[in-house]
Length: 410
Image (cartoon, rainbow, N blue to C red; front, side):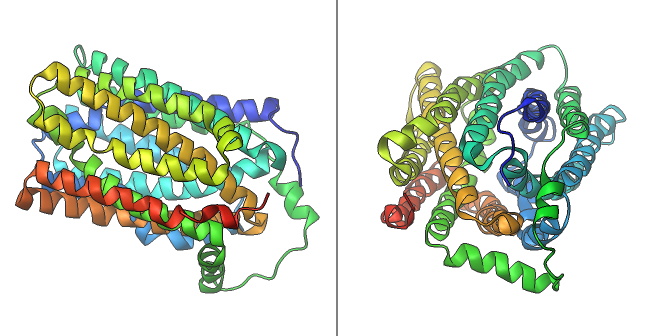
């Protein structure tokens, strides 16, 4: 059914997510600082940490989609945010009691990852249930634009706060962000119950059959399968790169946490532009070209990291990293808004959870493998050599999209 559009009810959800994104971004610099500067994590240990945070998408990604299609989306998101808020709060508690070790971060990252699987699958299926089908792209653009505003201000402010408070204490903002989203979701109302009442109840099948149906749809739907393969290739390369970014910026290039936050913040301006302009870009050049070119520019932006390692002078390195981050964020957000809206439009409502979970299983499931490979191979090859390799691999993501326009309905 078609909902009322971007009404007051949507604004409640939007407000909660906006507060959550801003608070979470305040703590975005904290985990790299804790792991690299406080706990002295090596490249391989950073790989394990990143793997722990995304392993749930590989292990639970497919059944989560089938379960979320059976469950109501809003209660699922409420429970997931409560778990994430409590888990993050454990880090400062362990630190101030003198107990915090790197393995604690692995466990906490794993718990947050499990909750995030269910939240994200439910979230992408929730938007069509919250707003009318004609404004899905507009709703996604607003949500992404707000997330980018948070990325714009949060990391720099977080880096600045690290001058006066400890990184573990800053993570309390992260916890409060999840709890803010939890609170606003409690008072948000959606149209899922009405939608379910309007369509006949399908007979309950076993979990494997439901998973197979969602995965089969992703593989057989021409546009979605091409986007999924492109995301798989891009994510493998970019995850390997971004696993090592804290080592590159904080240790090898010697930037401070505040400077690291500034790089993230100034780069986020590009993401804000990408989120705000995604709809206009898609209308101007076509959805297929918007997806294609944003994939290509996102891959090219990753070259900024190995390039900065070759440069002399911190000012030049700083500019290179900011430009790369700006272009990369603009491309990623344009890609995300455009392809997510397209997938939501092409997928039948009763398959949304399984479709989103199947896509996440494929494109996020590769991330823990990539993160572990990054830790191991960078120690064997050297960080700089490895980053040149992953940057080159990332450009392969555009190949599956070369004929995407043939499979998108007018």
